Length: 420
Image (tube, rainbow, N blue to C red; front, side, top):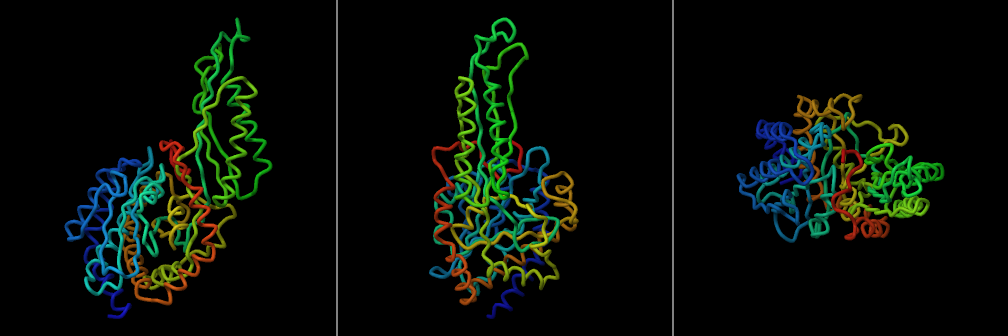
């Protein structure tokens, strides 16, 4: 059967299951669950796979709310399709992960219906904790992407984009401990932990004058003391450090580390500096694969906003970046809201359950399924995809090596856009 015929078959299958897919999207949207706690969403998605007769591993790759299903002829190229389903604190699915979950599910179920006509293997992964914790990096450490030839997912937005501009991010928490004393009667007896944090904050503010335009440092004081007449003996701060790629991020982290140490040195306090266990890498979009996705989306009647016309500095972060430096990957954006509605605000959460959101579920599932067929059935596309990835493979290997530190703190780390 030709690729075109296979594409028609998966699109027909997705149309037939559209009411069920939309129910899944609405159910996940109605009960938002935070990173690592997506119990009902993961169970719902895995249950649909099991009812379709697919072998499913729950609690896959070391995470209780992850799952995995693999099918197709062994010894053939393998494509990973990814679903996310965690929500944001306070504003629910304002990143539209209910749509991401549904597009991955729909594409997978449709491809499974091809049976012996499927020209390769599919590995469908439920990947928790994108907003916080770096679920994909944690799964990768347990072999989730070993043997995968290409990976793909689609993310909702206000416009259709061939890729999402992403930079690398690390998160860091600092705690200063000093000595409490009466701030008026005996200030000389105290060691001011707030002064230590303010000194570090000001040092970072001065550092910001001398970093690259692709780099960002921003932070807040989360604990500053208990009363003005008590020398603060414990203070806490939380900071994001971003750079264009992992190598530049590693250098910037060292400069920020010294700023934190300076706060302690200047005041006599101690500093406990906790960096995230998993950094989020920049997104390495595989352009041959992305062009295949673009063609399939255009066939569905969608148009794309030119990536080069995005405002300068527009960038986020995602743990899909960590996948993209391991295997050829795409992470396009699909419109489910008007262009003026941006992700991570309550209005976007409303659009994620709208008619446009439902259409994104169906179109996204079709485009992923069709792009998987293109890759699995076209040796020339596979060769171009591999060559594009190989062009920067050495830099990617260095990025992957820098992305995970087992000595880091698992409780922090994320895409830099969720509350902590």
